Image 1 (tube, rainbow, N blue to C red):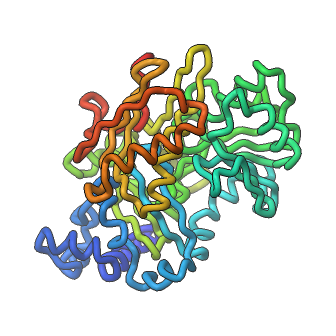
Image 2 (cartoon, rainbow, N blue to C red):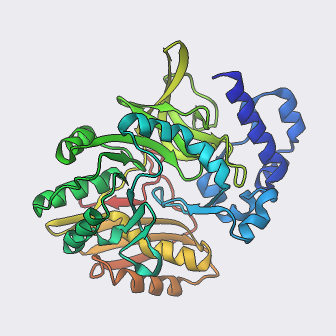
Image 3 (tube, one colour):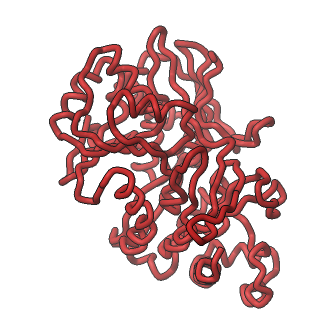
Length: 410
């Protein structure tokens, strides 16, 4: 890693520890000042943070310089998708986000001549006013809730009418669209020349199958809402964007592992000043490899166990599990993130158990009623839901990770 990247991450860490209450409290808790850490110039002395540790303190993660901008809604406000079962509001200054996405746009251009002005179709769990889709300029957002076979023909017609030039999809969503359009003998999206897969690991052979079926370029982007871009697929690994996000791999005690050794992935955004993330665990496992290419050293990330959505089984049909997130995201949207963690376990074709960690003051009965009211209007509305409330959803004993959707029918 070059000196410029090292300086950028140190400057971001210094900014966070001076301007963000959460980080100041972290140091206070271990009895150390920033000056003491900085004078030692030892990055590994900085505390690591986990998503499940910060979800209840999200307001304390906003930089004091941007508190007024949050209140006045002058920032880009997004949120994590819940793919790990933990929900978090994320804020970005527009200029910072543009810088964070710049290397990704370069790779999109190299892969398929994609530009920011080109028409994009992507999929969200929840849209305002329960809309089926929304179009804003060159962006079309389609509700994932409308991708069952019951709605698919109409949804595909709307997408084809929009004529998107590229799409952003989760691998499970891309596979579902490909399979269902085949079964229903629906025409391909002829205008699409590039598909970007993101949000979860793609299984072997999926990209080649999509390229053959859809006749377009398909590639994987690895990133999160918190830091935006992390890396871009090259072969069976990701070339890291060290100019925008610092990636490190640590063991279970928070110590750096050797090159080529597996461990937990932590990231530091080099651009997000509104809501800095420094040594932030994203819940994935992998290893880093370095390689000299075209006269310079590059770092690559090999993912081993990462977030992966499954599909709900409904008799002969299967649908993306994201529909189960819709009621939670609506509740969090209306009531300011009262749900901290969420996990769904499919027991049978007609029974799903929901595990919830939430603000105790909100009320369990109120949440259950709201969830049932929203889910009733979806394709899984007839499934029997049971609710289990606890103070924490714990990682799986074998993998050490939390998978938000578990299908016990498999």
